[in-house]
Figure 1 (cartoon, rainbow, N blue to C red):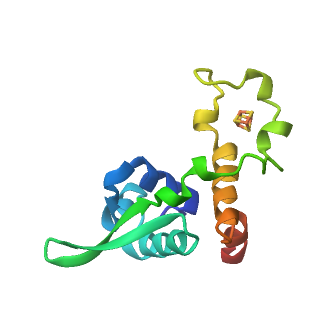
Figure 2 (cartoon, protein in one colour; figure 1 turned 120 degrees about the vertical axis):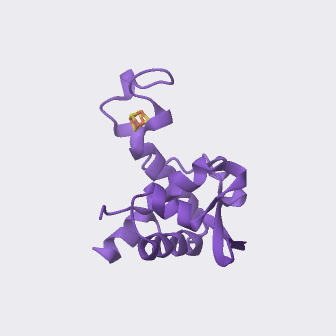
Length: 134
Ligand code: SF4
C-alpha cells in the first residue's frame, strides 16, 4: 500500500471543489484503504484544513470532505512571506505560469502555502505532523 501524505489528500479534496467528495472516494483516489483515508481526513480536519459533514450514502453513514473556504490559500497573509521557497529556489529564473516549471504545479510552494494556512489557524504544520508519524 502506498504511503499517503496529508498533502496528497488535501490536493484531492481541494480538486473536488465546492461539491466536495465522499471519504470513500478519497481513499480510492489515493489508492489506499479506508483506515488510512479516515486517519488522514481526521488529521486534516483537526488542522482546520478541511471540513467533514456526515452523509448517508447507500444506506451507510460516511463523511463528505470539503476544503474549508475559511482556510483557502487566498486567506494567507502575504506579509508572512518568511521562508517562502521561491526566494531560495534554483529554478526561480525559469519559473512562470505556462512554463515547464510553474507555481501552478510546484510541490514546494503548495506545501509552504498549506503550512501558512495551518499556522494561521494555530494548527500543526505538515512538517510537524509528519515528524510525529515517522
Ligand atoms: S514556485 Fe516553486 S519552482 Fe517556482 S520559484 Fe517558487 S519554489 Fe521555485
